[in-house]
Length: 380
Image 1 (cartoon, helix red, strand yellow):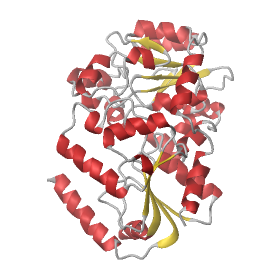
Image 2 (image 1 turned 180 degrees about the horizontal axis):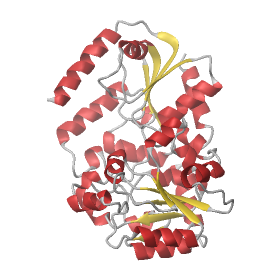
Image 3 (image 1 turned 90 degrees about the vertical axis):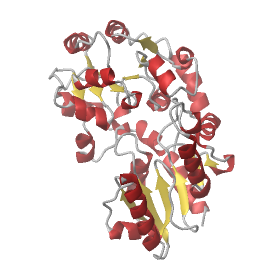
Image 4 (image 1 turned 135 degrees about the vertical axis):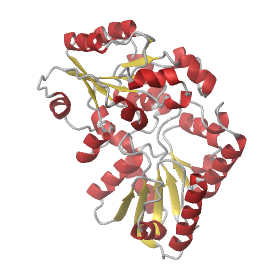
């Protein structure tokens, strides 16, 4: 019922916004990615800083049933509409540019095991009708996206992703250490753990582990032992979970010196995106998240936690396999192996393999914001 009501609301607002005349220099960014690696938010920052002469509006969260008529007028009058998820526009004369939000490793759309044909067909029609351009980084990316949601080749533009610009120009490491850990050790190393959205596994045991503070969902998790190892290594670990999981962990997270949960509030209060922090880290821990493809640009160590691999393969599936051959980093499925990997992180045996995957996935990886902006200028 909620979906039906929201759909009705959306159609009514689109009908009214359709009456608003288009303004040629008007940009609207519909941001559904928050501050967690949002191409939309970071492109907005670029435009506001480099092109203050433009009329640029950031709409977030998107989609939402709580937008004012003033915002809907902006959407209706926009010449260029940028999205982080599904493409969207109100009029044929508008130009819809899709950023999307990551190179997919997990199956989605028609390729996924846990989706229905009717919904997939609807989504493919949306991409066909409403996406004028789809931002891309490589042939590899275009092949994966088209296999999942049926995007035509002619829609892709090889500009690279705006967030990559900010990944290589992060805020200072000293600021992160001071803000999150009250630390001023110049030689300290920072790691970040970013898993994929695990709620979709529909496994209560996994959710209970996360709720108890076991953010890795490992069978032998012990936060004190993990913290002790980090202290010995002079390492600090940032935990960035999906918002749903963050809400589960907040109340039960134990207080330890070298591990901190990164909240969305911190990012919003400081007007920064997660990628502006990630670029300052020394290593990444993840599982099946697309973050690792972008992290290849930094050529820094990555540890892959694969304790839920079989569940993901069965529930949703992966676009590339075997998993063990495509991930350029240490594989761990328990805390003992994780501690061993953290102790020898500087040995880093995977530098060349990361470079191999970077060449395939991130063919275009610099001055991406400028390339997107110049694309809009060519459309006049």
